[in-house]
Image (cartoon, rainbow, N blue to C red; front, top):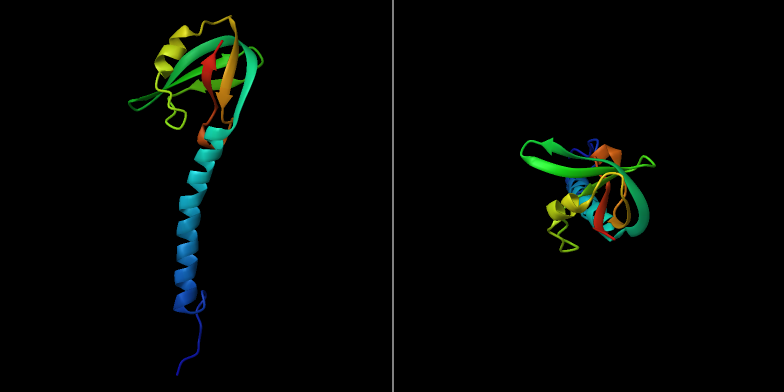
Length: 119
């Protein structure tokens, strides 16, 4: 009888480790997306510049504020908003707006605060 154990112990240990890794790979993106979607705020910003960032056939509407922040304007399924193009067209450079936002800036994933509405 061979009682030698490999790096991961027995087969049950390896299966458990694989299950744990899969769970983490599924849970982390879902948790990130939900916390991003439900982290909301409001602020007053003056628009310095606006532009569209293309990635293949996808486009992301971006605006920068006078204080150096960058915001995106994208559709959001959780908030049931599907008019990002219209909202982007309403924003003018040099104007000041009260904006409602969701999310935060996370450079590693190219995420920006998402403007949900303007007043």
